[in-house]
Length: 130
Image (cartoon, rainbow, N blue to C red):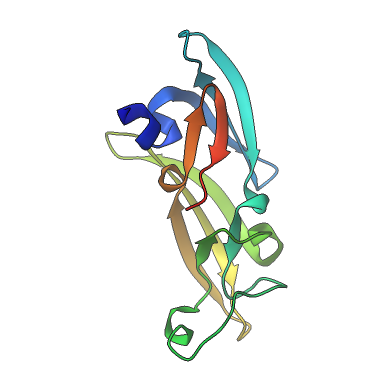
């Protein structure tokens, strides 16, 4: 049960980023074997202040809208530069880093822990709807 709640990185190896927005890894299957898997991050990760289709803006949310990654969004790579993946710390947390455009024409440094919302489901990396 712990593995289901843990991020994909706890049961994956060879974690890399291809084409700026495709997360690839070898994921462990329930039988212990390994399978290559990938997920298109543009389908589940957005830039809340640089998207072509921005998230709903309310006065209470404006202060948070400074070019940040948002789960459940899309097409973050369309408004990002210097996108890279780094595996950090003793537990190997997979962070996606980028410079995200904001609606004021500036760029903001942003990072997101991909293990927050991406899981290994029987050998396939998948977005868990965070």
